[in-house]
Length: 231
Ligand code: C5P
Image (cartoon, rainbow, N blue to C red):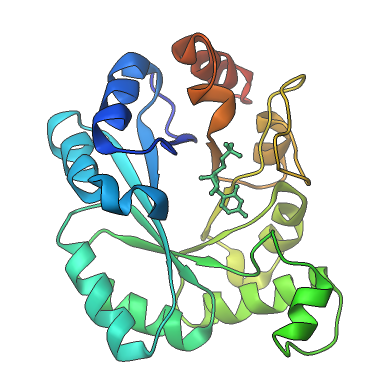
């Protein structure tokens, strides 16, 4: 049975490679993430193909940020592609505009709070007010949800705190930074296993390299799927 809690990040260079990988994974995976890196490599065409021809769910990870009118126009255009999830930065004006652009479609807007590649020194350089990273993440999450986000992107370490926010009731939490026990962490620093991420309150986990770099990607995906707690 496909389990849509597992989202596979198709971080391969182009749509042809992505489609070949998806076809290799077959029924083991029903939800894919397409990122900015594939935009110039046929990413939107791949999204349509996966959705319309393969019956998969699709998460477009674009992390949009701009003035409201531009975000709204971009999201309105993307909403026509009949996709499932789209990321934007969690600033309230961006989230509000994205929600407007997605109105009337099934596209869910997920807010990024603080990129996990940033630390406090980066926040200082961006003139973001004092406070620990955890405080800033929780406050940005609450504001994004108040502004109409359908869910949040969170590291597994943040998932439990965000799940406990009153605003997060009924909202989606999607966590990258997930590694099966014993898998290499690559450049991910704050990792958890798939089961830990779900237990912390994630609705979906995003896994890339442990699947698409595996000698047998289908077996790797099935092992992750089978490690998740029963629903
Ligand atoms: O290969 P790996 O499992 O690390 O891939 C994780 C995916 O999630 C990548 O597409 C990466 O860009 C994305 N991502 C992340 N950490 C975030 C946000 C997105 O790893 N904080």
